[in-house]
Image 1: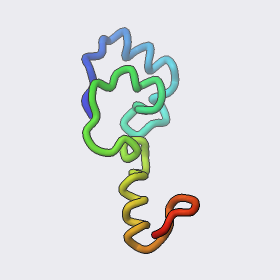
Image 2: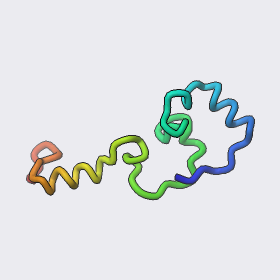
Image 3: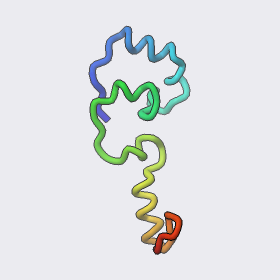
Image 4: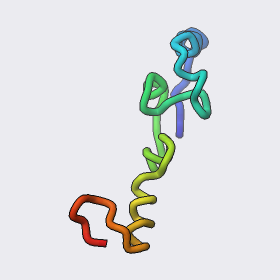
Amino acid sequence: MRFRPISAEEAGRYWDSGEPRDKAGAYAVQGLGAVFVAGLAGSYSGVMGLPLFETAALLQEAGIAVAPGAAP
């Protein structure tokens, strides 16, 4: 994750929103904190919590269908 430069005023407004108080890393890439994200390498869903693409691939390798009507 790469953040753009954030001014003290922006950081203060973000803190005052209440969003960072219950977030790992004090930001939510899918929330208000998204305006600070300049770049992301890797899995977007992994940053959000569970790396869905990678988890689905592992489940399929184990023979578990991960989508309705999907063949393992």
